Image 1 (cartoon, rainbow, N blue to C red):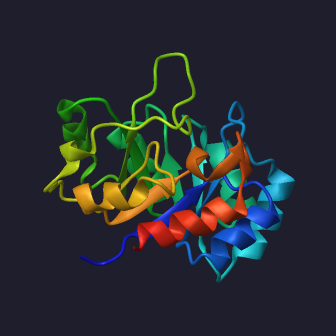
Image 2: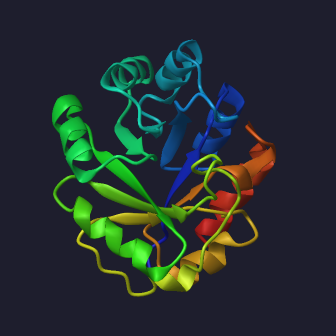
Length: 212
């Protein structure tokens, strides 16, 4: 089984970005959802986007954002992909893909097997599905360290490339990959020392463990 690609989400400073690049992560996630502790202001987005150019993929994370906000972030960070983490419909995903000409990643919150089936509605509208743990109503849509039953993804066939997020950390990512054969793994809180603050040592440990 080939090693999964790796996305590290919610990078907010050059130290974290450099650590991700040094650990050979494939994607840096930049969070443009203001309530998140990992929110990236426009000025820093421009700095990190330029620093990442040619070294790591740049994925912008949005939650029910309007076109203007997405356009500003795409321009500032020079994004390579748009990740939708809200209630965006297949129609909205397709609209954004057409407007911005960028791959669309759609997050699907999972608590039970039936949730996974929602992904099929995005065939032809999105380019990638990221399965994440469903969070309680009234809380942030991700980055809370919650996991779901990974065995639900065993043998998955959905007609789209996909990845696994939710509660992944250096201690459990190898087991998650073994159980799911996930082609991509994504970590946020699991590589932090405190909410929103990435730990370079944990970044290195996570990437090594994911490929082990």
